[in-house]
Image (tube, rainbow, N blue to C red; front, top):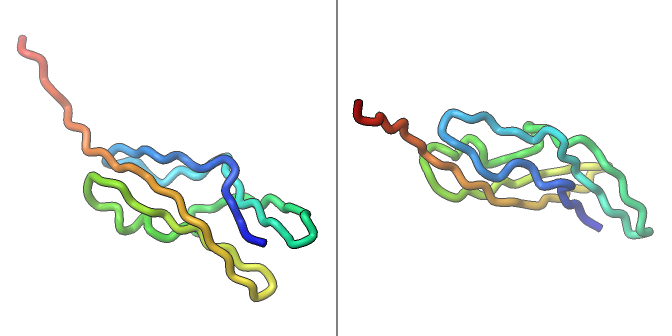
Length: 88
């Protein structure tokens, strides 16, 4: 048993964007083959606070049920985009 994300949340961000997990679910897989989907919330994710400069970061998704803790991870890319002024 374990978890996975469906679909994987947004993975590319530009400086100033906020974490966006809308439309994503944690899918819990049980040993009997059953799966259950629960809404993914930004509070389920560790790692966003470490995103402070351009680069690739690992986001860890944690899920707990009946005292059993499970986690999975995915990577995001964080870009710093500057406005370029065109010559007049």
